[in-house]
Length: 474
Image (cartoon, rainbow, N blue to C red):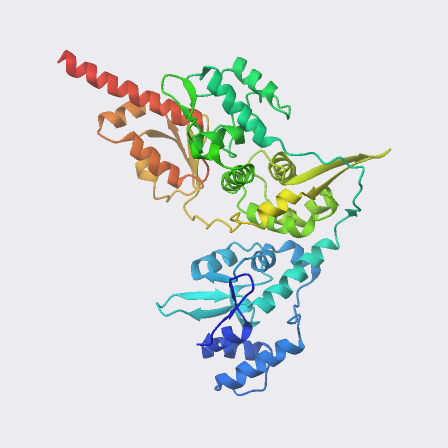
């Protein structure tokens, strides 16, 4: 096995020559046949020399796709922006299976020499995109995208808005420490106190009207977008605790409070990625693209045009709303991008630019690898206590019936509803609600809404109280 070259960054360069030496003869033959080499197909050495010579005199490795295919097929960007160039067999298969077009399949990528399957000592197969090819592919994809964008030269008169999300988070925590923050039976902050808290924030937000809001966090349906992110971060990190007596308390000794501003913001940004990439699975890919597309001021509608193929509608959010509200606006709230608006006589143009802070975070230790596709993540828990499964053969189907009753069954989906009576029946039958909720959270594609989680706990407590009372009376 040829020794890999150590890169200046401390990683390992995956050179084409090393990959070809480790490839089996069938892979080399597929590449030789694709490019119609005249070498002997039984000699590994001859085929390796021919392939290396071909790629040296064709530095762009003859990418035959059109510019439009680069923009419409996400797989090119996903390959080019991968940080290591190493892909597990399951990862690469899932990537190509989710490919929305037929312009490139896995076998074709192998035949072109873009991906080299290599068998490891333990018998597993990994797929490698050599560094030389990955670099050329990245330049090709980014160049095609940038040609479609409208840029704005830096203007010193543009006032750059600084992020205040950390100070607002600390303000919220301090308010919780100094006041008795009461929670409703569903676990949300009473509107009177919530209004007071929102008035203390540097970014004005209105309490959302009652509507179908879910998917972007545990308390997204109760609170406005920015504050919902701060609240969920505080809850899941343990900074705040929702007590059963209906009060919100702060953990004033939490280690997060002792960290510096950069570390605090980094953990908040990572939480945003984890929370939002479940409804937006290609969020890491889009963030990686923005590093290359928004170093200068760029018009946001032109960026949307080149990345819209990586987006999809999410329930009541259109692709454009996902881009503007769930990605760009949230990045602005976090200080990752700066926003600027120009008004003309007949139109309004919105511009944005990656901030220095954003570049530091995105180029640092933030984990931008795409979440592994979960084939069973077709289960959704809604704030109205309904559970919808879009796969009738879902493995959790039987267990759902322990604490939820089926309301509707079609060829394409099943609809369940959690009721207090069903919960009490399940508890009486000896099933554990806490275990069921834990397994449910691992199956659902999105976070279980906070009101559902809290109400189930309340119903469970009632069941225990009834059981204790029954034992005493007996």
